[in-house]
Image (cartoon, rainbow, N blue to C red; front, side, top):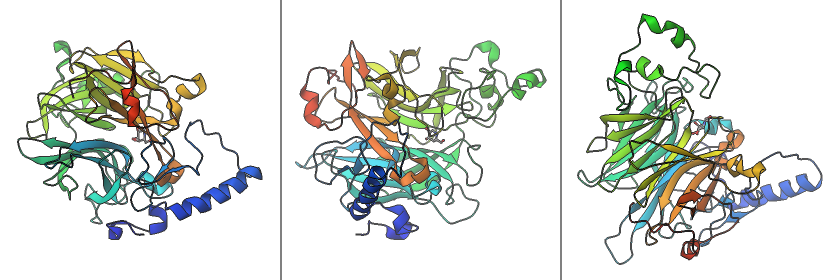
Length: 432
Ligand code: DGJ
């Protein structure tokens, strides 16, 4: 069966993994494995290619194919979830937004846009189509082939608009643009109208920059500027305190990102900046459409990606990763009493055998979802990327447990929401 918005899809076989294709793939894979045709060095704990979570199942199966109401693997990578309270006795609805990926390596660029799904119970997801579409117009921000990553949607109570932010790279320019894209809609599932893209916080100094360093780069900075490389990862001699000064006039680089709305309605954009060397936490304007002009630099020179921020018991927690491209690495966790910091690194939150926890069980964080009706219950959402065949990337959702006031991640092959009734899985949280 064809999902909604088929016209938006390039070639169906590349674009959807169906139940039948899965069964064919399983037969081939079984043969390949038993005949010794295949060698795999995957470090992930994800299940065999054959395992699938069907629409209507009420258990989570991290790493399995996760089928929507059309029988297609959920195509919402690097995503986030927004809960929309219900006006009727039917209760509210969750909306899951993410990168729609196509098959092969082409899927590492945006060929379709941002896809959205809805669910009442967090396991059965209904395809709601494409919330934001790429275009065929040349030289535009959303030109097919751009990189559109990690979309997140929040709701603004004052304007009554749904606001989407994402990491945007311009078509054909690899990861050099490092911009933030913003789109807006009246209805949660869209369609979203694209407002534009920019590098945030142009002509704004970070709140925590020492007064003596609040001046743009000049002739005396040449030697340090020459040390800047655009590897996206750490390297010897990374100049920790110059890139934000270099980018003062044009705005700060913004790649991997998330959004967070605090209890007081203030929203924040958390993004990997300064050639991925430093995270920025940046307050949004009251309408959530622009930066408010207040931001801090966090973990300067430590290279974090994949930020996922949440609040429990009045404290702010931040999951993230190291910077190793599509390859998994050890997870990271930090805590702060104020969103502006100081932030304290707590180490790798993953438990389990070193071989698996040191690579986050093959995953990278994308979002933390507070579970409605279960105060203090949070789901950690991550991606297991498959860059050679992007559409096959897997979703890993795990219940967050707590040890000595700190969130902990433990692999589970199968679990359901009743886990949050167990001691250790609920933080008695009142703050969302
Ligand atoms: C890791 C990031 O977290 C992903 O969103 C993506 O940008 C890849 N790097 C690209 O290599």
